[in-house]
Image 1 (tube, one colour):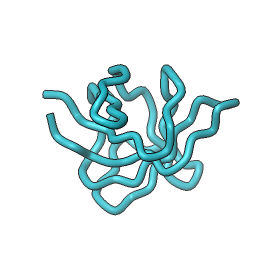
Image 2: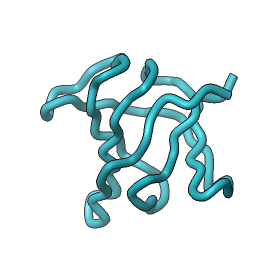
Image 3: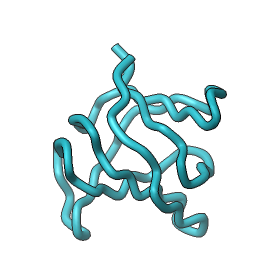
Image 4: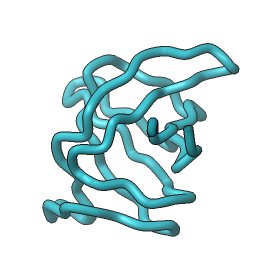
Length: 82
């Protein structure tokens, strides 16, 4: 499991997390959300957006929008599994 970023904002009406990346993420990756050391849920990345443009992959230093299956709080850490 590799930490790839942290949630900086969450839009609850859209179920979209804004994530500042410390690593690389790609469509198809399996990711896990962890808050305060507690595993929240896992999901597969279905789409990534940077500045409202769809991307297949994003790297360290990028800020992305990612649709989530459940609500997450600011500060939630994001890990890539496998």
